[in-house]
Structures are given as C-alpha cells and as structure tokens.
Length: 295
Image 1 (cartoon, rainbow, N blue to C red):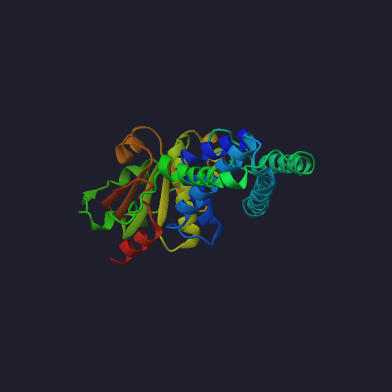
Image 2 (tube, one colour):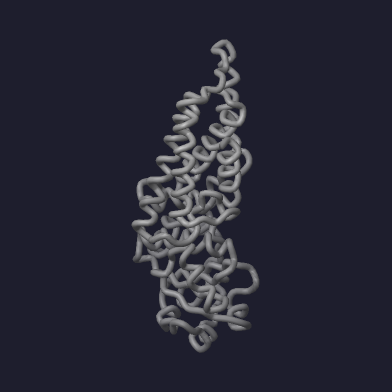
C-alpha cells in the first residue's frame, strides 16, 4: 500500500500540469494557487507512503490515507457526473491510464484494505523523544515535489512585456484545406488564440485541457484549435481533454506544417492574421489573455 502511494505521487510529478489544472477545474482554486496545492498533495502521498512502507505511526497514517482516498473518490464521482466516464483520470499521471470508474473501484478497494488494517494492524510508533524524526520525514516529503519539480512563479506574466513578433499567418491554407469543420473567415479579423495540435501528442493534450478550463471560465476569449491526425484519433483526444466545446477543425500534411511548424503544440495570439505572440502551454494564462484582448 505504501508503494502504491509513493508511485502515485511520483507519476503525477512529470508532467504535473494536468494535476494542477484539476484544482482550477473544480472552480474554487485559481491558477496561481493550484501549483502549490498540487505539490502539497503529492507530498502527502509520499508522506503516507513512507510511513506505510516502514509500518510507523500507522494510527495517524491510516486516517490520512483514508481521508485522502475519500477526497479522491468524491472528485471522481463529480468527474463522472459532469463529463462522463471517459478519458484518463490522472490518478497515476500519464503512466497508467484509468477511467474515472476504474480509479473509483481502485480507491474503494484500497479503502476496504485500510479499514481492515486499521482494525488489526497497529505497526509501531516512533517514541516521542525521537519526534524530530517524524518532523524530518514530514518536511522532506512535503518539500520533495517542490525541489524535484520547482514552481515557476513568473511563468505566465512575462509575454505581454515582450516585443511582438508581427509575422503574418497566411490563413488561406487553413480555409481551403481544413476538414471536419470549415474554419470561419472571422479568424482573420480581430484577436484570436489559435492553437495547432497533434491528436497523439501528450503535450498537446495537456495544452487542450488548459484551454478547455480557460474557455469554461471565460467563454468570451476567442479560441480555435487546428488538429492534425487521423479521424479515428479525434474521439480519444476529446475523451481525454474534454475540449470539444472549443471550435476546431482538422488540417493534415504539408498545409498543417506550413502554418504550425514541427514543434507541438504551437499556440499563436493573432491580431488581424498577424502573430503577435507565439506561446507554449505553460505560458498560456487566462488573466494575461484577458489583458491582451483589452489592449
């Protein structure tokens, strides 16, 4: 059980962004706080895992583990109700993909084991005179995610202070060759967030998840996604990202590469077809987008 908790925390660390976005998606934590909450919870997973692994301080550890699993179960039930039982719940990051219902069954099974252990297996307590050891384990566990994957405090607020690129994007290639949906000619007018993504690219899926949350929090931000890939990859892409509400089309081959290049995802902030900023998904920030639209 200890190894499961440690492995769960480790797999969430890289990439950690989907786990961070989960808390923003719940609606009561903002983009600036979520990186801290995500790392603290991963730290608690490491803490629980270490105590379970060495059979120490189990009375408290069982309560922490049961409380953590109950919180995750509530989240999974809400996820099933809101978006359905599809995609990857993220319980083991992108390493082991599980649907919300599969993860819920796993958590219920773990809860059952913990209730049995709570009744029959007490382990051993670290003596109070050595309580500094408990404090050290606690501090190291909580600090480890922050050290191993540091928070970039200024990751999203810098690009509006940079010089604009002022490079024209020839959108005729998109209008004439896109399929699934015909892109609106209004993409060439005014300001838009235009993203190019491959349906099989894991980083693109992270970017799409972030864009979906921004879109849900402020649908006035004009977004459009241009996807590259086979038609049969579209449904798995949206089962994972739930971003189908953002307008999108499919563009393949040299026409896609002509506009996006080879690095994915490619996210442009365009103004009357002029690329003002070329971002990665880490830099994409709701507040900064809203400022850019008002300029």
